Length: 505
Image (cartoon, rainbow, N blue to C red; front, side, top):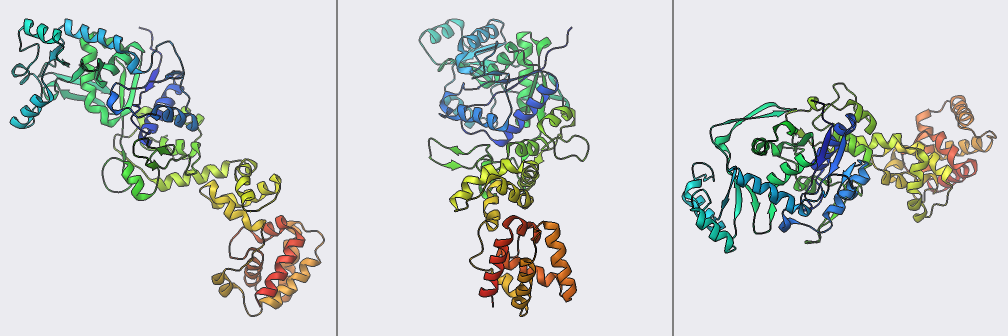
């Protein structure tokens, strides 16, 4: 048999913002598809109309656009296997519901929510399965005429999958190996509801994966309990030969303690759990996003890729192209991955260092202008190049770069007490004369001239340079001093030194 083309899908529900765990799942699907020259399909699971949230679908699409993960087909992208929105596939699902009913693989159940609740109250750990189904109101326990009469009378019903007990169901998982679950512990899951004419997740996914020729289902560990049911459904339809290979990814865990990462953890510890800022249309609540918090998409991608997978070496910084080349599902961890949000900041810092100085300067230019800084893009890019190694977020750059363009109007008290000595006014006056005499104001010549003067006078280099920094910057921060004076120029250096001597006597 010819090898199947790799086709994977990401199928979120439009019930709210996209959780960062969902982004990680989509990323692994993307990497797998690209590595194998396959297709990355975007499907929307909107069969639960009660949980639909306006704007959620658009938010999900915008998130992937920002992250740079491109779909090959699906909702809003087109393709030959549509429609890709489950609510538009009702007639397709109904046909397959009828196939299961006709083949005795499923049955109709009329039990009301109240009747089911009563059973649960009577029987501890009640489960609708082979041991209880004949005592319930369904087409297996009722006469055929009554079933027909109830349906014709418009009585609401569901279709349940008929699971035979006592069978070991094998799930061949690419990460976890052979997972075996006995069918006795599975209940007769609801596959279809007549109330809205829509299938449940279980049936819709199986039918869609089959008809869309999905070759691999890569999803979160939370879906592992559903896998045996899906295997049995494939068998019930006679689709064993086209069953996709499963891979269940490790959970994303809280940064501290145990349990799955939640929005509450992000709110409590101050980090986003959504790719973009989310405005809840119902509550009006605004949740932070990685984009608006100042993270670079490539940093988020790199960080997420290493939560539950590693390339087998010590390499941490990897572009999307490198991730595609190195990714291997078999190297995914079975254990959950702790969500270290400080590490994500570290990745963001690393990617800022890789950014072009001019590109970063263009980003912060509006903020600099708002603060009254009038400078050229070339000069700002030069300053950014000196300061970007000190930030984790681009938004930190304007405040950090300001002193290059605006002379200090006051001097940090703590630094003044520590760095401005009794002899500093006299020494800085001497330094002022030295600087006035420098014709070649290049970094190298400035440094040589000043250091020769310090040595000739027998001064302590640290004492001189610390007082010099306070005079020029206003506090004890910044890069190498002659890099600063090179940017601000000779006249501004002289003016700042003179002012400090006058003010800090």
